[in-house]
Image (cartoon, rainbow, N blue to C red; front, side, top):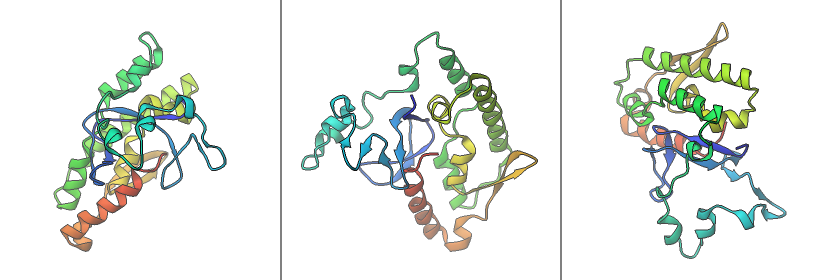
Length: 209
């Protein structure tokens, strides 16, 4: 679990075939990356893949000269945290409760409303952020979770996902507060604004917390 991160339904991902950032319609688990350009955490400059014998199916299928095999795996046989966490594991129950009370918002809708100057309701997102942080902070404290385990059990904090798509973030009296930034389309024109957000998100979706 220490090198796995959960990507929740509703997050934005960089589609490997189209190269475009889009909302993911299903949850999945991926190996964490290192650096802004995302280098697999199991890769060593000196030794190459450090888990080569036990590498994931997608890595086995990857052939630079023939990408069809790995392309055909996209969206199939997806592994989630609930496939990994056994029934009866208290962390599984906590992950299920967290998903129920604060599901990830559709980041595609957020980004479109910002680009089109139609975003108005910050209070609902603020409520979701408050629930998310209160819940995960309590569990991290009581269960003594590492950051790596937190990101596997709960995924990335919602406020970080919102910040990446253009929602302003500040800290007031120890609490995270949201503020809608000036829409990108007002600064650069609607189409330029969308293009800029897409470019920024292609970088952001490669990062890990």
